[in-house]
Length: 357
Ligand SMILES: O=C(O)CCC(=O)C(=O)O
Ligand SMILES: [Fe+2]
Image (cartoon, rainbow, N blue to C red; front, side, top):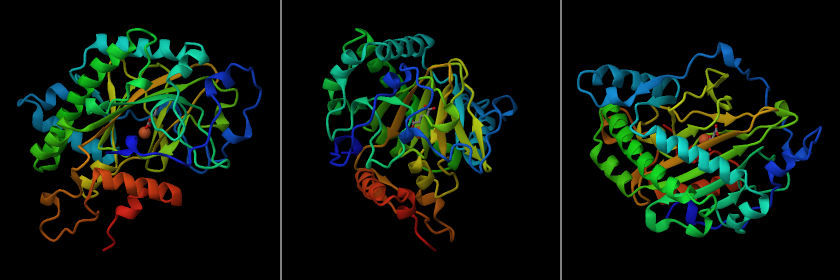
């Protein structure tokens, strides 16, 4: 079933951020102001940033270079939990046109975009991230969220028909990104020396959700977050950054590092399922999005999940030889029930899945 088909009785309405940003405000409304943006954790200036590792998928697939590239993949997963994928097999044409169609959608008047607005208590459509209370701080972000796979789970009432080619491009984009996810899963398993076949098969019928994030300019960017810090509830999230201005940041060794957009690359970050399967060898990294006062930023993020009845937990090869499992094994559906429960209680879902030794 997955998160998308669950109902949220406790969602509250949130202002449209793109509209707010056109109001020439000098200060942002209090619900957006956070006191933890800079906090004790420093942000490494974008120009001084260590580059996030670059992984070449064509080398992973080529016997001549595979071992070396697998080593790079292992280090990237261990040291960062996030990396940029190049030569991933998706055409520039699809990436460029999908970005263009998504931008055109967000540029439509609000009344037009609202034809595909989220419905009360529903997860998909155009709107904002779910909030559970009036006190909750808001993100400087609007989004369009759609389930793309399994195809029979698509809720087409939320798929915009304007611009006219958006549906067609989202359909192609999501087919191709699914293939990238399956290939990446295969190499991820190879890198950990675990059986990959079952895992890859679980992605053939897997759940894929695409979230198109729109971050308009903000009059007080240092006081807000485009997206608050979080880990992803997926195996991987695959992100296409449609802008040249960096906005995505990842937490590493106590510092926030920018992930600078590279033309044609896809940013892959490990989600909590990857942490569980690897028995904690890899960690799902905390990441967030920051905004600026002059440029709009758009990202297209695909959450990649195995099928809903698949058992997610430490791989058996990694729990042999006296190494106990550090996480429970649960189905994808059970994970999301626990996720909703833990969200209500305000605890990280991963804490409820850890086995204390
Ligand atoms: O837009 C970004 O840079 C971050 C998006 C993200 O982390 C998410 O949608 O889960
Ligand atoms: Fe994320």
